[in-house]
Image (tube, rainbow, N blue to C red; front, side):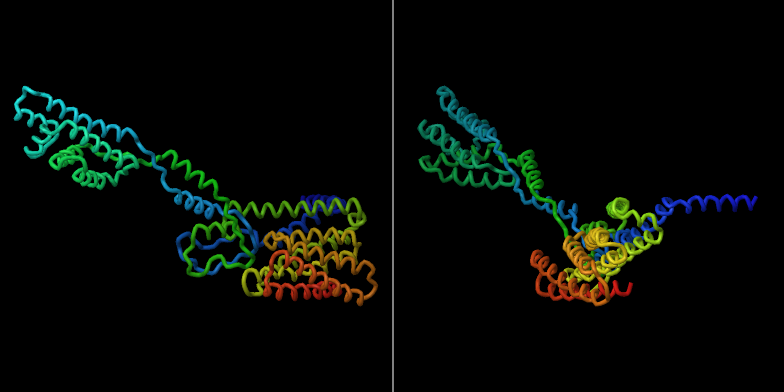
Length: 455
């Protein structure tokens, strides 16, 4: 039984590994998996014991650069914009109309009482008190015996006082103050006999004064919503090795969001970023296979050539990831410049020498793209890597001795210097950034030649 199993397994292995296509698929999957592990380390979510509103137990730095829309900061900015919108008030005209009507009703009763010629004066005084005019007898007698014109003037002036006070709007908290002002002004009315002014004050005091200026909840909500919608999403840019949280700092919601976006805390975005990287890497490998099938099919028919090319690719990805992780110190802007040191030109020259320049150009493009991705999706590092790689490939297209590789190193240095100067001017590099980036570009040329010669 055991012998039969051994023979059966050996037969399967011979069938699988005896097929060129099967071997290519297996080796391709292995190279792809190795590349994904190398590049995906920085995208893997890590467990940090960090919670919101709690002090951070350690310093946390960004493993790679990233630009994202912050939901936390955007919502805070929109809330601030909404709070800045002042409430919209609306005037209720019915309040003033009702108050003026109450005043007219009092004076209508006064005129009715004054017209009761057969009614004794004592009963008239009682009727005035029942109408809400509670004053000393002398003032009430003056109201009964004064000229009708004075009654008309007092009515008109009291309604004018109400119009003046309520036409601009009276809020709920200003009713008491408005009442006091009305009473004071009633006692100072001009064109009204002195003994009638207290009558006007008492009539106003008996009114049911109430606010007529209210917040328009619907319109206020609409304007606040418009203010929220006018706020553009807040873009946050984090540079590689930038300090996110310091030890002892109280962690905010924005800090938690940044850690999740960077993949330092487990979140949905952490895994989607890793999946995105895996997908882009798969596309790159598939395109490379199509290129080989179309233009360099002999590599696919020779195991050693295919393995050699796969190893060179993995080494290239390793250089990208390894050098990107180097911390050269300084600010976040300085630290991320280490990407200019990645010697991808050496990898491209190696492919050009071992295979041919056209394949080297294709490999250079793939590696340059992933240089930009691992450097925080920043295009300048991809451009620099591609320019130096193309320069290196052209420099060794007819290499015959080691001296030619030394010349290639000089060409790469020159290409790096010119490219970094151009990119620096485009991106507004300051003098310290130039002083770091240019030497890194020069040393890149040296490393590229050393890598090619050593291989």
